[in-house]
Image (tube, rainbow, N blue to C red; front, side, top):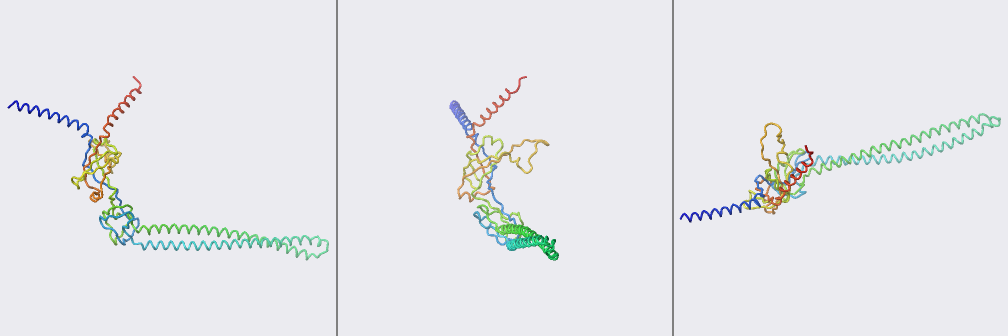
Length: 369
């Protein structure tokens, strides 16, 4: 009987050794490259909807948990005040346009006045030239006594009067030119006023359009706090849109698990809300730092007593899920994630070899003692 037990014990020992060797081989080749964590949740790039205007809510066109498409009208704010501002801006534009038209007409009139003044000046110069020639022609005759001195005196008076008229006409021409410059300056001022009115109208139009809050993305309504008749302030959250098609997983692995983790590696995901269902995906990216490093108050290990704590590194994962599953998946759900890092199994040896080569190169470059 003891011989049978000895043989059985020997067989059991052999089987146990074979199983242990097989398990070690499986662990060394496969199992140790699977990294698992339950510190993972579903995330989504949700959008918070708020108003950039102040006003009373006229109507709310969505309900909690409702699915909406991109561009769907969500909330309407009372537009009366902003319509009034738009109408005022339109009136300012019309007034500025009329003023510019008036200035243009005045400019045309001033140019005509310049032409008339220059014509009068030319006529006055012609009269002056004639009066001057007559006075010069009669002067020798008067000196010889052929003509009376009164005639020369009258001609001289006519010449001086013509010269004064030329000066007056010249001043009138200069005044007409200054009038054109003044009207041009006023026209530029009116043009600036018109441009300002158009800018104000554009701003009023944007404000009026902003009374209609539309969905920037497609998704489901969550956290709706806005109600009809409520007075909303700019920047205050009214509701949130959670996209259903752009869900992803953020898994927080220990720093001892991410050494061989690379984008593109296959992932298995199990959702607590769907027992027995396994989703597949792949690593999308790895955060360039630990979660603590990006916290509001990062740890300062250089001060005080230090206790080493294994840090967590957020890893973003894309998952493949159909429409039926996406109706259940929601941001915040807990998950269990398992990443297959076997594709990077040789990286550790490559890193060791690289560092040994760098160390040997550094030692050879160091001068001998």
